[in-house]
Length: 124
Image 1: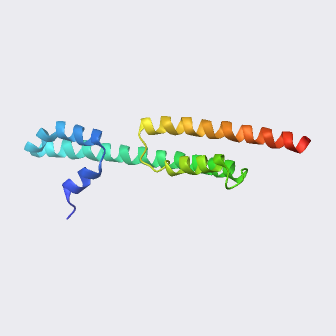
Image 2: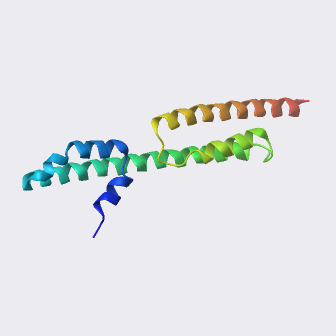
């Protein structure tokens, strides 16, 4: 048998709060059906959200790999990109996504600058 409390402890704080608000429905047979339906719907939604975040994190990792391949492996920019990639482990909160957005933008700026410097060096 699946441990109900173990499953709920793995869910997000928001899902646990909503289920706590609905706990009173578990007092009747109709309420239990209602509660379980809402619980399943919320768990499905949460799983979909996590898969979406994982997909975006994977895409960002691919782009960062492409950035990093253009840099010397021992450069500061390559190190920055590796650190950003380390932070791309789902689940990611909105705050983490915003911080990562800034880090990715910074990595892009570093890459632009390094490509600009490389182009100037090649012209000389």
